[in-house]
Length: 267
Length: 258
Image (cartoon, rainbow over all chains, first blue to last red; front, top):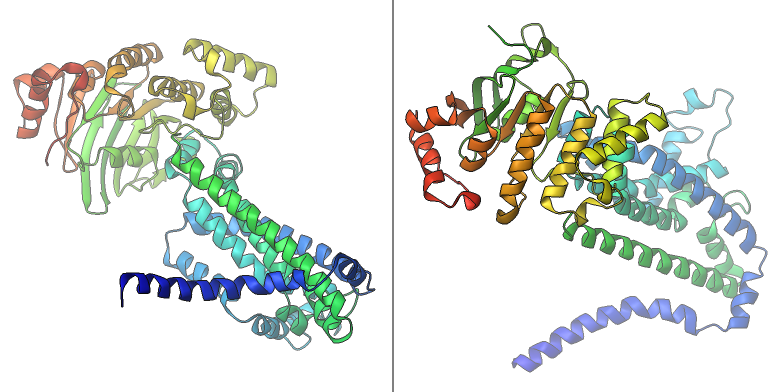
């Protein structure tokens, strides 16, 4: 094949995929009008789902940052095999299908789960409650934060931590005043990814928490429900989520870019 | 047998492929550690600081024991009170000059009243001529200024001894001489036992009351510059002292093959 032909072939192959990836996002937008968009959002499905999504994702995000930051810090500083093993195991929820994560949660926290006898002596269970939504979001999204935070902490110059220690700084002080500020762009990028993931959580929530309006029906589940009755609502909600996702993506990219340039400039 | 107020260590440790086995005593002044790359100079500092574990040995400053493997005593790194300045000075890039110094102050003296803390901060800023840089971030400073910030931080800690790793390595050739001069002044006025790691014979000669030569984890010779010149104990020492005579002083940058 001629050199021109080869270049055209590469362009064709790459272009097909790029078009395929971009087209659905545009299709969502071009097949609606402003009036239809607002009408779609007027559905009674929208408000409770939006409210529930905001509350549950905010809760799971706070839990992720509060518990995930110490975990990431320990993993970043650990050089033991145990640390490496823990790091691998806790990445698993990122890779398993969300539906599997939901079933696994049922077998852990459900009415017949392994912890049931200990957690629910009276017989009721966390399954199919708002708390179950939070747990599902936490399980599938927290690993994103832990992974990003661990790698951000690893990039902090170890000598700075040693210097702070020789000054007498306690471990918590080293983390809060030196390591966390220096890792901040990575921590925020991880939190943004985590929030995006939990906002989109569908499979694990459906399995473990169900689809009950006002209690467990988050935005993605509301889209699923709307798809059967009111296509315009499904489309409007989808556009809202694409918009949010796009904003989050731009934020993450700006943060990662900012961190890269900060590292290149002389300190 | 041991003078009060000196940093003394007798230790053996295995770090990766390197085996260190040595004894040193800074005396009341500055002991310079020289040696080829990979001889264990920076590793030695990590062992003294408590960053890396020592297999056997003792470390003490004056009558304060920091490590005694026989008594299973090892003071944690946060409580050794050793003033450490790493290569490139280790300034916290997210804090201003004043913020860097204030961090050290708040670590060393957590119960200081705010007014008293401010007074100490101002005093040390003036002492090291850093007042006009108080609000600057480290990346905007010259090498010599960074070194002064690092010293200011260390002074606030009121340390038992100083450990400086390659204090001139981050400086350009032209400013090196001035900075060495001001460092000699600072070390003299602090009057603390100090250990300075360098690979530069000029710095060794100017800074060190005595010089210890570390080769492959062991000290092959320890003495004054003149003793090293007149009775070099190894081919490395011979080349090391000779390189000062042959190169222009301010640009000596000694690297040796092991």
